[in-house]
Length: 357
Ligand code: KG4
Ligand code: ZN
Image 1 (tube, rainbow, N blue to C red):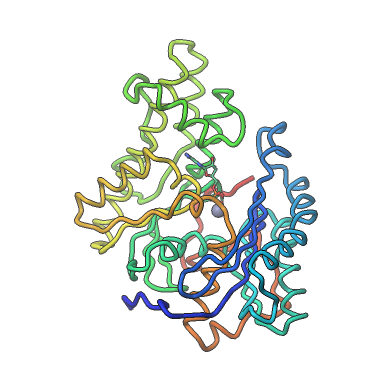
Image 2 (cartoon, rainbow, N blue to C red):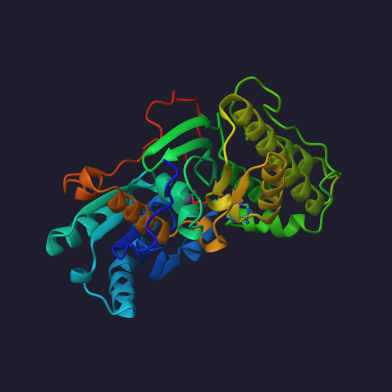
């Protein structure tokens, strides 16, 4: 426990990510070097539908993945012989896309004789701050906020995650996306809401803070979204004020629930944020401030590592290789893609629980 390690680890992992709307490939070395990477967003394909269409996503992953693999390998000047393991997201996510990435990884593993590492996408997010920050040791308190998930976890080690809170309805990224849709800002919504909020007054529109102060440890964002809809329909507010007020309400909920998690499971030496919503500057600033107040170190991955990417998947593979033994031996080529795959298998199921549709 507490070790930071791998500063001289020269093993190389090829990582593949395809669980949502980014096709991504990366080569990462155990000493935290991202040797090469490529990422192709499907924004343009999904934009006309205002959200991710699973069939379109799976087809786009299938078309792009092989040429991207070839490009990344040739850019790095490496062959499969130089790689120590093949890591791919094996869930949770949109099953068609996950299968494209996982099956490709299986084929590469079979052809090269290298181990297959079936990675939980959420574990990729959870460990990504350690790729960016070589001084970040276990344990840490993790706020995982993405399009599909909103959770607080105690990260005690690689593969050791204790869920302290989750959402009982929408994920925070989903709430950002729905707010963007209501405000007709288009897809993807999070960055658009953040941009518009810059011009608005965060105190202008009274919006609820669902579950704030509640003895239930969880999050809820469905009521906030409905309140945004009512605020828009009332015609009484400027869109920028609604965006800023929504963002402020979301931040207030995050801080309240983190404070509660600390009183129940703390203290922790570090607070870490990961997932797509961690790209939001207002969210980051508020968390940094919160961490300072609670005498915690604060780490947030650089923006490119917050949203979906393959470097975090390859890095999760590096972390497993560094553990050695069974962890490093690899998964069976029979490993089945998992549309649902909780990080903490012991955590009780919570209704809704932020499942990306
Ligand atoms: O982690 P991610 O790339 O994919 C999932 O695994 O879900 O997260 C995507 C989510 C989307 O809901 C997107 O709107 C949100 O992250 N997001 C943001 C920002 N950038 C991405 N939300 C708020 N502000 C942002 N700047
Ligand atoms: Zn993600």
